[in-house]
Length: 171
Image 1: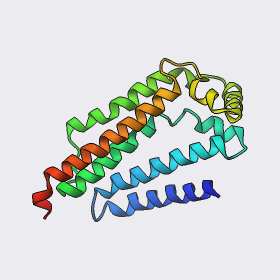
Image 2 (image 1 turned 135 degrees about the vertical axis):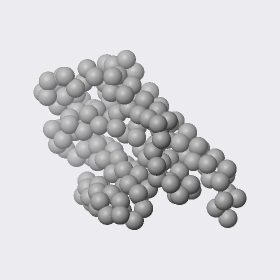
Image 3 (image 1 turned 90 degrees about the horizontal axis):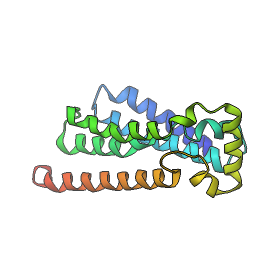
Image 4 (image 1 turned 90 degrees about the vertical axis):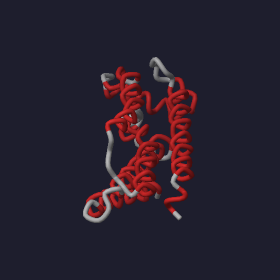
């Protein structure tokens, strides 16, 4: 049931992105946030709940760098609401740095044979230990997950600070 809900969430986020650009461009960040969040949930469901190793192999590490954009999408949407401006600045390119770093870290996975990816997905279905430390990269998946959680918490904190700093204008 959950893959259908996440699929509908991704579809709704695409509709939000297409129709919100006419009214308030900041909603594009909200649509990106919802799309990435639902894509991550779909990847988790494909890996742990569904019994299709092909889908799990595709979703396993291919989208892992993109999931680091969940925090920036939340922050950019929040900033666009509080400051009433959806404009991107050059300094916002720094939000892409974790995506590039994780892409480089997982570079080796993209060139594995598909059979090896399927066997890795089957191994992960047997236990979480294979997911956290099974694929040998510079940074193990356990630390990548920890970095993603810390970055999202940092973006939430930074958004709260922006809200506090702009509280007099909001009132």
